[in-house]
Length: 145
Image 1 (spheres, helix red, strand yellow):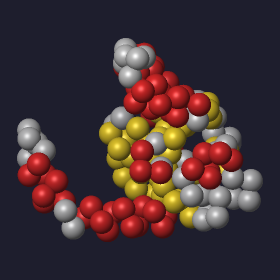
Image 2 (image 1 turned 120 degrees about the vertical axis):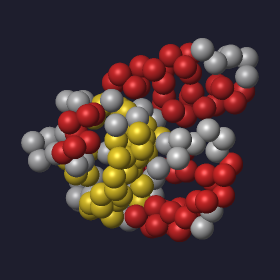
Image 3 (image 1 turned 135 degrees about the vertical axis):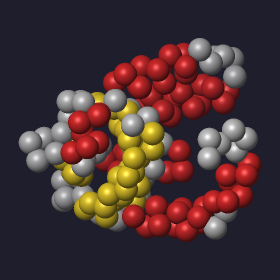
């Protein structure tokens, strides 16, 4: 399970350090793609296969299904960390996540996936949802706590 929040800076080549505890779970290579809320999603291959199977089961006659699958798969790329634990994020994905102009990134563990956010977007997002945290918990039906 992925959890935690780590801040790192992209280097001039667009490489980002992935924390060791995340690399261990992601494996020697993993998938990075567009995520929701203008972040990037990183999936271990086993989780990516489950995502792929669920999307393949969606009805192709629904425009929303086609659009979501197209954006998710067209942005997907396999990444392999180098010896220093850095991954090269493709330029299109850096642009999508707002990391072309801002070099500070936040690497976040979210259960079955890792997310990469621009620090500015992450800070704005967490500030926005933190105010509604109790309300969000109330709206979630079967929370175990």
